[in-house]
Length: 493
Image (cartoon, rainbow, N blue to C red; front, side):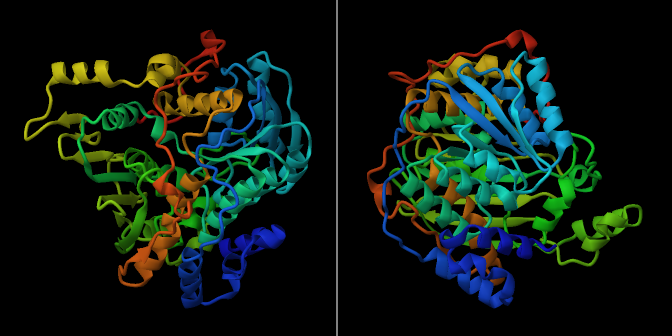
């Protein structure tokens, strides 16, 4: 079944919540699809309730249902076992073997067995409709993110969704409107916002070290050849691959299909949706020099890949340039098929200070970069409170060097203490919508397109992300650290 057809069926299943611009995509021509992107981007529905800064009633114990127990999902199960106040009460996957693997993690942690929802692509519905969970944690392939998130919120559950959260512009509006109507959080699980250097530089921005921010750059440059072509195995919990080759299917799309790793930390530094907003975007994409050839080579040994032979795959490199309302600029890059080192770039340039993480980590206050002694001084002075509290523990638990655990711990701590989310539904929508906007711009010879204001003007008064950890924040403990070993996820700190 094609990706467009699957999306069509998902949207139809959502009923009245799906607007026409999304549910008709599969039956439209390319030009009609592009016109629908632009129409959806220009929508300005009335805000029912401002979810930015919203503090939901506290949950002393957070009962979690995890949907999708593959590479990322099994890591989420493992990490959550270390957080106090968490009960993993449900595990959901279309593969029983994956759920069995999640149960094994719980058993090894000395925790009770979770309720099982398996052997069906729609098993998540029964889980969401039950009274077993407070938070639905979504770690599936991308085309299931929004159907599950909507089902969770409609059934009075908060949801946290892996990146990219939404694939289409209408999906972005769906989660915004549903979250506002139900007053349930829809958190984007952007782990890079919790990496150590990104948090350090964010706090430096907050403390005025950078002066006025001028420009930011971010990226997702990661050769995914191994993951694209490692054959999925249904009888294993962790594939080391993309089940049903779903990510190759996504890469038929001429767009930045994975923009949020580079964009999220830049948006937080620039207070996007909380004092500034993205105004418009332009995008360009190279031709495909490698992915189509690799598919053809691999298909000679793997018949399952023949469906992709000859497909018009996305180009190697795409680049987005974004202008903000306050005159700042952002550049985002995406390349998953060139043989080059991993990089998220993460660069911030201000009137007083400059910082860049890839390929070398350095901070500068002019032409010369800070030496080791100065870097140590800056780290001691500006390391934010969240890293002081759980940074070293997070490295023991693992998950991309610890940032995955910090993200999960902060999510749970906010839910338990009734605190606003660092990354709310407006961030989920505005960071994810770059996919659709880049698709439109690339198809229109890099013409610019406006970025929707999902806050509908509230960005002018919404408060920036709070780094102080004041009041009730930070009361959630970490347990059973003696069980920790090397993190299972790729360490890219």
